[in-house]
Image (cartoon, rainbow, N blue to C red):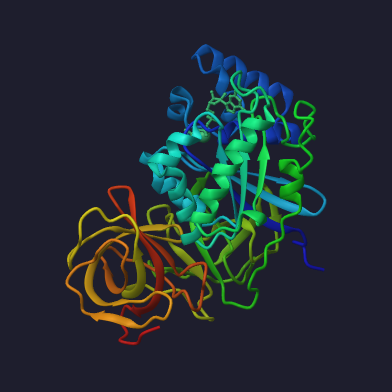
Length: 435
Ligand SMILES: Nc1nc2c(ncn2[C@@H]2O[C@H](COP(=O)(O)OP(=O)(O)OP(=O)(O)O)[C@@H](O)[C@H]2O)c(=O)[nH]1
Ligand SMILES: [Mg+2]
């Protein structure tokens, strides 16, 4: 019988800074028993010593000294939890724009996004466009399921008010519609991450709430996956564990892996063997599509194995280094028109690669794909164009048509998302063939 029977779902918590993402994640896991009383007391004691007592739950995710001293997340962090029928990987992301790259790394791997807002702060982020940008990124990465938490319902100016919740919900519904998410399919749940209301147990402080708790919603999630594609694991991180060696962590985007199997790592072109596969400190013989796993790779040091690389099967459509790719992109936030030579960062799966605009092939109608203008001179905001980019450092990427989740891209310049789109074709290194 297969060892990994439970469906594994990756859930990214997103939202502007201080909306309460890390607190919700920490308190949720406290209520689920992953964080015990003793550990929480320790967090509280240490946090109080540096005047960060209100971050005690967040510390279950915020582990860096910098994060704890400043009281905000810098990196993405993952913790895992399972119940009888589902395994959840909670990915907490930083809300600050400065760390958008870390947010994108985590979001690129998410099946579901939980958008966290607070009723007193969200309006500023509506006007600034921060919330719209969060949903734009979800769309760009193909995340179809969104859950919204209206958090901090305990705030003294909110006092668990149904009226305030409903007003916030009305604005959020408009936002979801603008981002082309069907609000009827999005659960909008009132919570207090600090007080732990509506996370696991049904709230008693909001008697008016008849909907699900966060846990009920998460437990009911089901993700459709394409099971028949060759192996692909974008590397999320690599650790060196003494006595073990290099362990690459990643979510199996497609296919499956087995202990002892040979793998190909692109674009560095090494083909090591998998020594062991582990998930949360337990060894497994196999890993299946959708699971977040750690792979102990024999003989590949930390200098070579890095975040953003792609693991595949050397015998079945192995991932490769590409020298250029053609993409369809829509310019969404371009302040100034751009021409050939423009060099943004392309966020694609877990990689963030600077790429040079090599050619603007055409401007097209996104609905009909009809060419409106051949070889336009400039990229102009709102236009949909077919372009060719050349990575300026080695890159491995896939087409959207073959690997839908992996062929999606964001075009980022000075930490602003200027375009979103997908890869139509690639040219592999040492080959003239297009894929
Ligand atoms: N009153 C109240 N405060 C909360 C609640 N949730 C979080 N907070 C407080 O809000 C502050 C920020 O919480 P975090 O969980 O660190 O916020 P975050 O969204 O992770 O912020 P970034 O990591 O910067 O993106 C902390 O002081 C929390 O104690 C809540 O439900 N009610
Ligand atoms: Mg945080």
